[in-house]
Length: 324
Image (cartoon, rainbow, N blue to C red; front, side):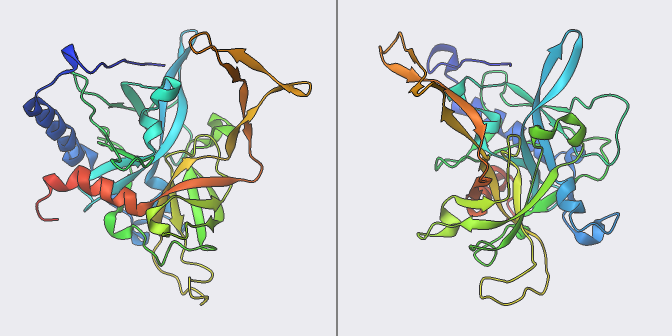
């Protein structure tokens, strides 16, 4: 894993002018013609699959790992391409997919794999996405309110076919986010292995719980069996079944309502017989319990609401789009 430490002084001090310049260059990458993505639209689909456009908007984020002389793509999480107007695009994901210092995960570069319609002769290693400028300035932006959300520029997609994006106008609202609403979660779950990661895996479910203080302002839960690799992936409300008033839905557009923050795995304590296994932390003198990441068979996923994601996307792109 490629990591890089950054301090608060010395070489880490960069003038505001330089920071502004680096950030403008990063945003400029989002606007380049080689980052064009079609807006989500059922009419643009090349087949009759209702999920075609949202599937083509969902990408996997990963790192490179070597096995002998062979380089492999290792999935870290998922992301969705979002857009203001089809020409101003960025990647929306969970913040911990780009950086998670608590576990020592601070890559300076990740790789983005676009969904494919058919197998290929050799492994797709993805498109490079640099996360930091030459002086250590982040080219991506995390949510200022502490939400597990982040946006980054698009990688160079020149030559890629059938790349789609989700426009801001298809971000959901209170009519989409209510307990019992039908959802589909897209992402690149690691559980099934690389043979099933050419396109995102779709898992249907429902919104299992919303915060009584405001569904749009707090994380919510879905019962859709999300797994490792789904982190950062999109959650969509399907216009099927009953609406929030108990009426049978009459169809309509699919709306983005959230981004997966935590999957169906959990940290569980390891026991030696009936006693928990522990180790001594030499720095603090405290006993630290051993834990293992195990499958939570309940299948509940924690989701960051699209309202916070929308603000982040607008903060990232709006300064460079005066017409918005």
